[in-house]
Length: 159
Length: 159
Image 1 (cartoon, rainbow over the protein chains, first blue to last red):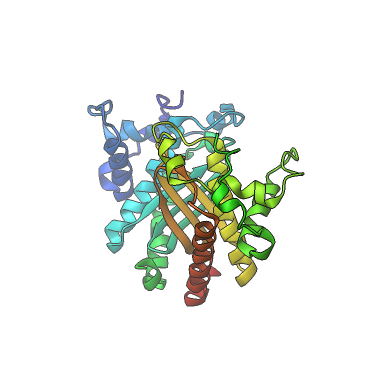
Image 2 (cartoon, rainbow over the protein chains, first blue to last red):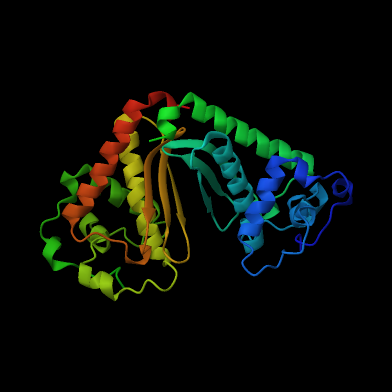
């Protein structure tokens, strides 16, 4: 189970409260925590499963279907991207994930008629980042690009 | 099973060869017919399950998951829309369907960064049109609107 694995290399460096993207990500997970399972967990602990080392990835089979927990993690990540774009631009952003049973698929984030994020996924069973730094880099990069698209095509984003 | 149901009211009026949209729709179904199940079927017979009367719809439960055949039909319809938009504009169009287990969800067709079709679905278990005329009307309407969006925002569609 990836859920309970902890990557010791990153565990000491992470400070969720200093990072808007990580805060948004933790929030997305808590929003779906209807039974309060994570109520007493710190944000740091909540986000640890997003870090998956190369070695751990290799051990995860890409044969079967993507499990529900991994799917939830993918959705939480892109919802955090959408939420940050909303915060910065005031534009409502929707997330759509279309994953085949083989772990291939699309993730789209859109504002009005504008796709602010458009990504293909593969081997989604192995979803994760090699470090928190990489997670933040990828998340903030997507947020920034999304904002740039909205600034370039404001009329489409409002349509 | 809706698959084998035939709606006698519409069966006499349909002429697939005269309608670009119906031709595209039949083609989308044949593309996925890897085992040649429908090889000897006429296009007319192939498309009949898309017509579902109000009474038939009422009899289909919206409690369970959307079955694979209905999902395939939804995908075929929007792929036909995408194909027709490609034919008319030369822009590659992708289809993404994100359906929850309860029959709610999104259908998106996009060219580059532009959403040319953006629709929410509900009660997808009951997917179908009350007549072929309604099917054609809906399909051609979506194609035309998609083309209009591409003409309005060509830079976004190419991005």
